[in-house]
Length: 508
Image 1 (cartoon, rainbow, N blue to C red):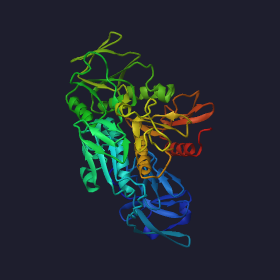
Image 2 (image 1 turned 180 degrees about the vertical axis):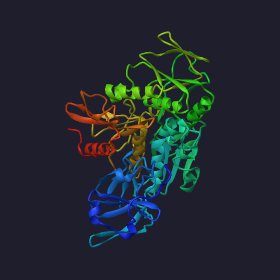
Image 3 (image 1 turned 135 degrees about the horizontal axis):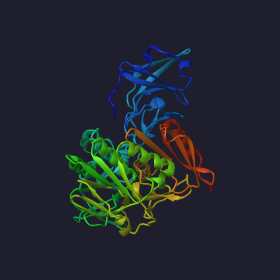
Image 4 (image 1 turned 135 degrees about the vertical axis):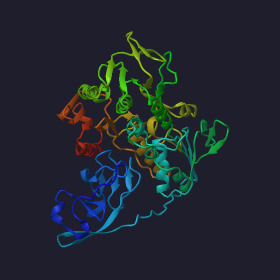
């Protein structure tokens, strides 16, 4: 998403010595375009130097076989074709021809994007229906077309807008540093051009599994051969007086973020209820707008349950350095037009309130359809539910995780996208197990926190580096086994940790 800068490094058309690739990567340029020379497993490649997700520097990434992984948000690209093989990137990187003469490597012309051949399995469906308009839904629809599925795709979304980059709603977009045209995952014409029937503001009332039909609230029956449920989650609401006042907001959709931005115009003091990732990212964004921010939450240390006490305390200190005022170990008793009354009796003035106390998966539709539930929609390793032909992905799906050895449900953006991609291929008959290592990132001012793996509990946190110095890697261990790794400015270590988890399955 950053602007292009002046190309760095040598002119690769003039050639570079093989010895300059001693570290496996060399950043150079072809004309005005930055190009990365990469020593892969099979040969040397020349590819675009930046990730197509947020323009992350692939020169700082990790080469695995004939692929390269972005250091920022762990997107992955095939070095042979440039294809984005793992979300959160969807667009390919450019590729150039490479020629080796003796001990010198030359980069030649840019290659055309290779076209895929349609490989329609005998059992491929004629129509696939996707319920949902978020990360998993978009990723599934996009992958179906990328896999040359020529049948009908119907996306039924409750949202008012096309699928957007939801993580940015509480980060740069809310802070005012990202324009709105960054937000759509694809422009509106993408859906028309690819033949995806995207129906916005459409509510589904029921699923008739026997007849293989989705029944809309208006009574229309939409038949399906395969169905993907990706209904996502909805914000938890406060059951207190004043929770529905106009200046009280939750943050989940583009409309929610727009409403908060509108309320922030002229606001002097904001109250954020909840010290979750969403709550604290919203707090940082509102501080960027020079609004006084107070955070109220019941825990003693923010995000201690996910990140542990030391990292949680660091995040609190970071926000306090930027002027955020915490009221921890407390809650909200009531909200009125001028502020809120805390359970402790303290009164806080506020002309803007953001509630970030977590989300709950939307399971009503799956429950009414008779699908097996287990604190989410239970799916097998192929993301298929208890009803044949119906798959689930994203915030609602609880799957058997090969890394922790447990069935887990994860409310993370990248996980949802990767599940959507796997579900798409499986709906076409691939029988591909979903075994991606969970990943998420959180941004607080200029400090990113990356997290790979999944640790609902641990008996030890091993800290490498210095948390206060913003240079650290934390291992969350249970009985000596690393279940998750959190990091700050240790991007390559984070990628390496994810790779190690991929290669080490949970003991049976």
